Length: 92
Image 1 (tube, rainbow, N blue to C red):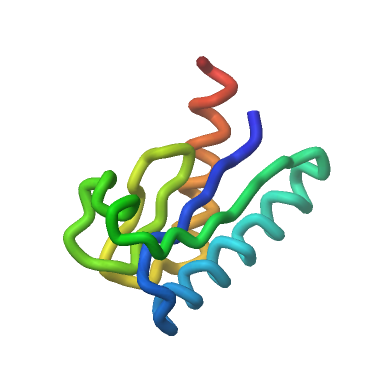
Image 2: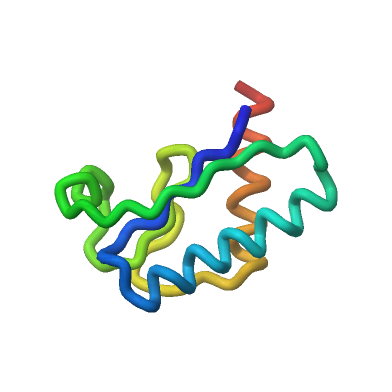
């Protein structure tokens, strides 16, 4: 199952940083799993952002689960969340 990653926010610098952290995390996972499939979307539409339980942007959603909001996560955190999503997809 491919990973579906969404960065939630109006397009500010913090949102761009979250997207860069997600890309860096995907690069780490791609070294372990060359067949990894993932998409990254940057959601700026307020109506779509409010579909998630988020009070502050930026937000990070992995496979429709909000994993982080209101801060810029470390790459290691994003790697852990991505691994968790992959493990969950394999177990489903």
